[in-house]
Length: 183
Image (cartoon, rainbow, N blue to C red):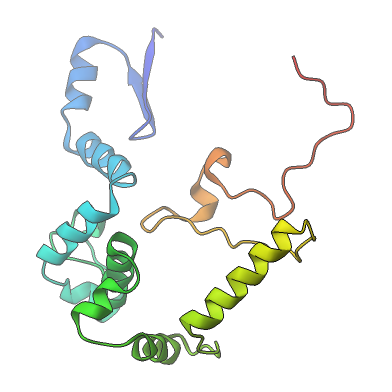
């Protein structure tokens, strides 16, 4: 049967010879799969700049689907997605300052859109809580721990499609077997 070449980007294998490998590596399917893979690791600022320069995809906005998928030349991001990405790149208050909106207006808009019953806090309240946490930490008093919510970066594939090395750890950490020996 001979040697076989397996392409990680395309998830397929074929007989390994110069002609087949060259044909595959220059093929449209391989180049698209390779682009999709590297796009998963792009900088948020580069993604924001590219998405802002594109026009919105009408079909995606109307139906939530697009036949072209990641190869579409139009943007599949909603205004909220662009705002979140901009906040990630520039900081949470940059976008709202540029539009002349206050922090309370931003929070009330987010609450209306998400339908959440989150109380509106102020910077002073946050600073008081932070000072309290720091005082408790300095006095070595144990803090009630809140589990941090792990969030995957935008644009990643569904969780069930990720390899185990990229999946979030369990809430209480990985279990350590009793008879484990290193070395």
